[in-house]
Amino acid sequence: MSILIVIPARLGATRLANKPLRMLGGVPLVVRVLERLAEVAPGYRAVVATDSEEIRAVVAAAGGESVMTSPAHSNGTERVAEVAKLQAFADAHVLVNVQGDEPFLPDDAITAAVDRVTTHGDDVGTVAAPLRAAVAADPAVVKVVRDDNGRALYFSRALIPFAREAADAAIRDALLLRHVGLYAFTRESLARWVALPPHPLELAERLEQLRPLAGGFRIGVAKIATAGPGGIDTETDLERANAAWPAWPAFDQSPVPAGTS
Image (tube, rainbow, N blue to C red; front, side, top):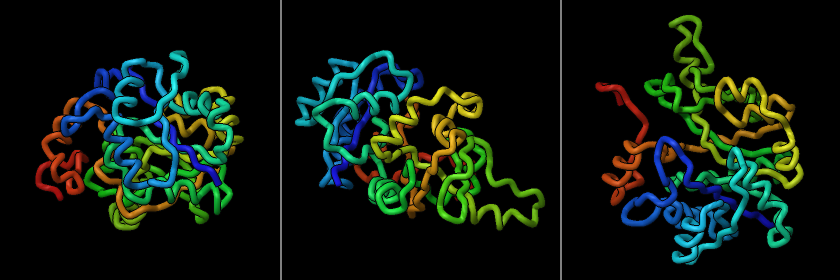
């Protein structure tokens, strides 16, 4: 089965200007993501989907593949859907959306997400990892709860599940999962996703995955050992990543209150 990884990349990020072109260890961030994909998914074709000639030039100089897409897209999923319609990628049975700010992607994240689609028959596959209770209340850390079949019940920036009584905190903490924001789709489910209108839950939480979930999609959530350091969203994230770059496997950018571990 042919797998295509698409990395949406644009220059319009507000929290970190020109994000794909910012330097991580002396190399543009978008190129670092391509390098990481070559390590964790060497058998899969990867393409950067962008609306910027500058990004395209940087990718080409690094020997990567890119394609120009419309500047009108409101999110990365729409950009991936445009790529899926191109004749050059018509042989891809499963498409994987990897954000262009994830140079520390966990080793097994892509294979686990793809497996939810190809083996379990889910409409969408994604991944999550155990989350430390110390950072669970941070709204920048997206949480997910699953049913007994490993499918998403809900995603939230809020602390879910909630422990009503203090005595139940240990039960809650064992269930805490941090969502890793990559998605595998069949071609058909991707087209259905982008055809849906924005949902009030999505708009309230600012979480795009709530649109297909509310629309009845089966979103399989594979559990992996660690979420890794996470994406690079802010100047602070980038500064910390550069400082830790030589030893990045040990780097953890999760905000941990003083005195916790």
